[in-house]
Image (cartoon, rainbow over the protein chains, first blue to last red):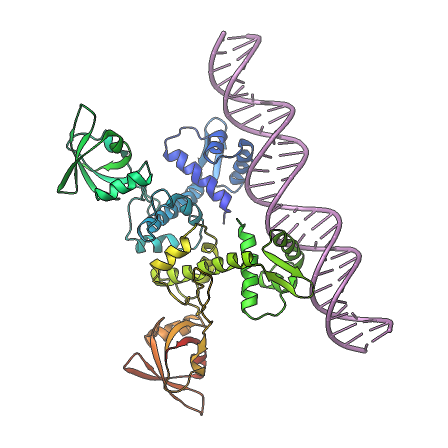
Length: 220
Length: 220
DNA sequence: TTTATTTATTAGTCAAGCCTAATTTTATTC
DNA sequence: GAATAAAATTAGGCTTGACTAATAAATAAA
């Protein structure tokens, strides 16, 4: 059994690795956790003794299999809880992360599996990050901004960057929510505005600023 | 903001008071938390400084208004999460308590209210304990053993006292679950067994022991 | 009322997890 | 290669919330 703090370290190391960081150093971890490198060194020692990670000065920190299993479970719970908070409790995109940070540490043998089943085995969380399966497998994600999609391409809304009331209200008016399907019809060179098709019927034009704040996943 | 530990103290003090304990002493708290009286004395000092409780040697510990508000919120969350775990995730009566002990400390402004709404504003948790309302009001702990109900009365199952597999399986066989309607048809003086009507059709006889372990709420 | 017994309290420790400041090591740059 | 900068580490300290052991106070019994 791990403490809350240990779980956070394992999770951060897992995330840094997934983000493609080649060498995971004490300072990188310290920055990600907003704490002191000296504290990180202590914890690396502790987690190494517990055989949850390995540390070589030249290669940086690596999770052991056991450490990765724990990290994946924490991430899985975090993302499942985010889906719950958004879909079932009606929280906003900008609120769910902090609550899920607490919920991810709730322990019980099959909690994640039950939650997964209850939510209908979602593939992605509301930020577009893939939810690891019970066996640890993770779907690959290709997240990008609507503004960067090519003409004719189809995509799915996974998140928003701007969470201001003005933007969210505008989204609501356009009936754009999570998982909404959007096709990029045409890019207007003059002002970089974009013609999009929302769902299968509603065609409309949005500004560059708008398109830069909508995080989507390419589908085709 | 309180720590997890502080919240647990406030909750225990609230519960001891609700249980009717006249004088809440450091030893009583220590026993309820299975820890040392010396630790309790330390915490009483700390919580008194924070104005969350008052302590007089003669009267014991009392929660201040602020302390009670916090305790009620923790209890409210605990019981709401228990309902969630049982009804939505399908956990058993005997598993939900430990998980709710963790979930009750998850903080967010309107978490309890959203959960309450999502669950359909339940009045009781699966153990038959009343769920405090947002304003702190608590329904009367209205736990009645089937054995204490009068003949002809109608009631609703709110919880079980015994959570052994044997009892739960028996309940399943009889198709008795939470919210099942039961009418007390007749009491047999010889061995205190009871004839009940489950729902509107199934009539059966159950033992005294059985009836003592079913917590119900009188309806009529 | 005096003695026993139970409670409460104080004093001193300890582990976890963080911190700062100082030092050593490793990378960079001139 | 030497000087400088950045990163890693060590040493020592702090806070929280627990503990044990010793003492003081209150309660109960003789």
